[in-house]
Amino acid sequence: MSRRSNLEAINLLELAPQRAAQWEEADDQVILLRPPPSGRGLRRLGDWLLCQLSARRIRLDDVGSFVWKGLDGATTVGELAVALEGRFGERVAPAAERLGRMVRVLHREGFLAYPGVDTPE
Image (cartoon, rainbow, N blue to C red; front, side, top):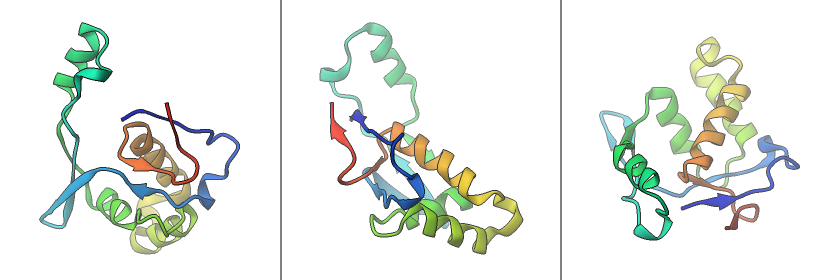
C-alpha cells in the first residue's frame, strides 16, 4: 500500500506511529510479513519483477524487534528513543537518529502508518 505524507512539516519525535503490517515472533525476534503484490499497483513489467524479487519475510534484529514492539500507536518516537537508549545504551547512539531512520524506512515500505497524518494516494 502506498501512502503520501506531509511529514516534512511535522516533528517526527512527536508522532506515535502504529504498525500497519502483519508480523510474527520467533526466538524473541520479530519477522515482518510483506503481503504479496496486487495486480492493481503493478503498472509495468519492471514493477512486477521488483515485487517478485523483494523479501516476503523480513527478520529484525534485537534492536529492530524492540522498536517494532514499541510502535503501538500510543508511544511517540521520542519516547521510544529514550526507551531504546535505556535498553541498548551506546550500541544505538545516537538513538533518536537511528530510530528516525528506521521509522522512515518502515513507513516508506508500508509497514507503519501515522494516524491523522497519512493520506491515501
